[in-house]
Length: 589
Image (cartoon, rainbow, N blue to C red; front, side, top):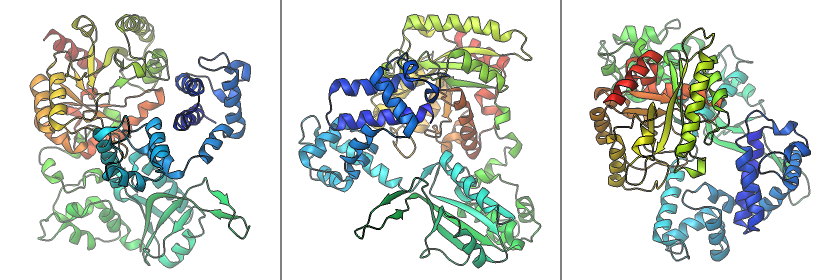
């Protein structure tokens, strides 16, 4: 069992202890252990003895025994007892932003509400606002959060969708020679409603029978058709229950994401692939033949690829991720597909965290792994002092970090096959009034500043826009980090006037971040072309809290390409020499 899985169990236990109004000391014990263990570097908890566990910060004898129980059994008895005492609907309330465990407990105990539907009704009738410590504001936050979650039901993030799609494709390739992932996953959508796979076969009926023999794919016959299998993926963590007759049966739980497996005869495989990798809006584009692109695709022969379809239509080739019907052909009048940003074109990584704040790996580990991956620079941007929840850096610790960076840069430069350097950055909180989180004498010690909002996220359009504007106008702001603060499928993000913010970044020479975490992917790709039109560069940053987090930049590259971002307009496609010159010029004004 991994450290992350152990920490997840401890964190959930903490929440349920708070929910059930348990002893404060006990709650603090679990919370402290979860926090400290989440920041372990290279120690695997599963390999440690009870005695060794007690040497770790936040872990006493009792907690060490709990960890050993999790490692040996895969579960924690105390958590299971708490879960058994908690209605499913109450557990679902933890997904709602704006209320924590204590408030959920109050709603449950005082109003007897144990379902999401009951909570919504209580909000709509004003019962929640009347509870002590809640009020109208909290009630409205709950309603807004529930509305957002309902609108996102049945969707998964890009990262999860890709994993599930590849799982299905790999399984189907055991039985069919021609299998490809199409639809939203192929177009690199940030969230996905349906995982779609195309199968070439002479016998769709036999293919459906074959698929139904795969134990973890469950067909919905009502919505399926002779040429399309529709259904869901069975959750591997199935449970067993005893029905009234006393006979044990397996209850299959399915993942909410829809699965669609489309069958096509082999001679139409390529044309169908092209159609399924494109939106209706893209396919409706007029061609030189006086028909739509879709009509041209239907006349495609077996051998012709997507490139051949575009050529026959008299149109330039469009990469799958851009086939949205949102001005991609206009983009191609000014650019070439080869101009699009790629992983290989990235020269450095600028928004990352280390153990100086809330990262899992040390500065040296983060730097050496970055260098191993072939990058020229690592920008370390730990959290600033106000972020106490993330062990934000006070001014004295900033000085210590900079001294370590200087030492590491000397060591890393020795025998290096090509230049590599750690850049001194900070992720400064944008405070309520839009100011940055340090006085000028500290800000000027950094090579660059990523300015981000992390607190007081419930803002009006005017408040949020004004707050960001003030940060953009600060001469020390280099990069505007995750501009809306959204968490995909979990938190909508605060509203901002994108045009006003982008135009302000253009005036003040501020780069805008595409935060590549699959939870964020913020700036939204739909605003990339407006940034480029205004001359605003974008930086694809992983917001990595451990070295493996660097690979999230693949998701950032996906949405950047979807939005038409070129290498030329990508900030961290600059070489080390170029970015140092840029930052030096900016600091000199």
